[in-house]
Length: 211
Image (cartoon, rainbow, N blue to C red; front, side, top):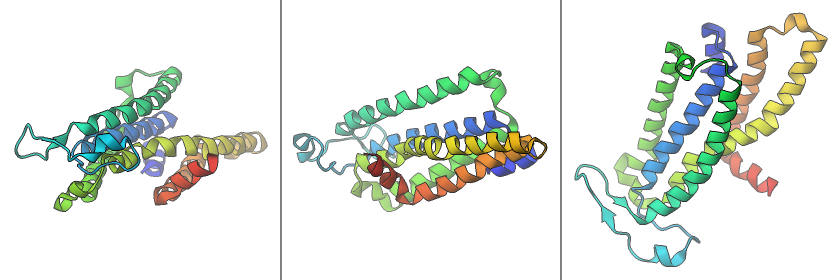
């Protein structure tokens, strides 16, 4: 999607980062919401609190019940997430010379809408089909929801930084070949490859290696 936007819609770094941050926010909100309806206990997390059967709260009969004991662990994880997310947003806004409203063009709006639809479908398949959320814990939902933040940090450290070194070197060595689309694609293609690799469970292996 990002490569198409660069080639056909002339997106620049601003649009790319906006879409990336939008995806992080959308995924986190959706899976944090799903975490409220997962009744299974969390292993190795405050055992006394999770020993008893959960008490369901169902304010709307047509919707799944929520579980009050999940709210604490959701808030704990989301606060940590919010610190990282708003740090990235603050850095983004500090270097952008456009107003927030001016950032959204019709094409970036469609891209964000496509992300929303794809993630809703993902939530449906992972947790709602056949009411599979009944067999899941809030930790499972939060892991999926907060994984994009870990991916963002890993991509920044291991892809963006070395790619920048290569791009700067290429600009000095062959400036006539380094047009804006070429530079953007030089970032987007390895970032896209890294994101595909990290979706296959590699986030955990990278984080464990760092520990």
